[in-house]
Length: 71
Image 1: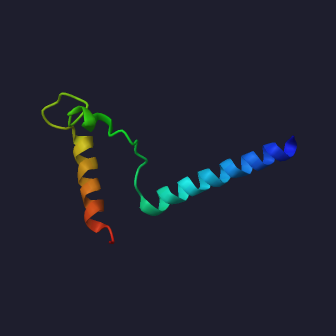
Image 2: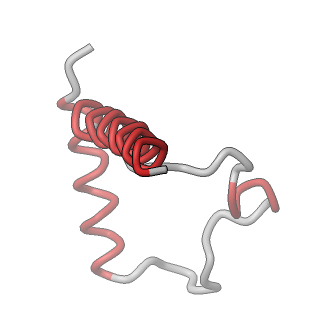
């Protein structure tokens, strides 16, 4: 019984290690496969006409990262 538990734990640990390595190498956030809110035809969650300052900084940082990526 303990052998089954340890082997299952080892398999799960290897899967999580592979997922974390993929995240660390690509520096890309984990995304769902269904498209999220954009699949509903909405561009953003809130109804604000203009994004807040924190969102603007985040968008600028993301744009900068996209420009600096090595292909």
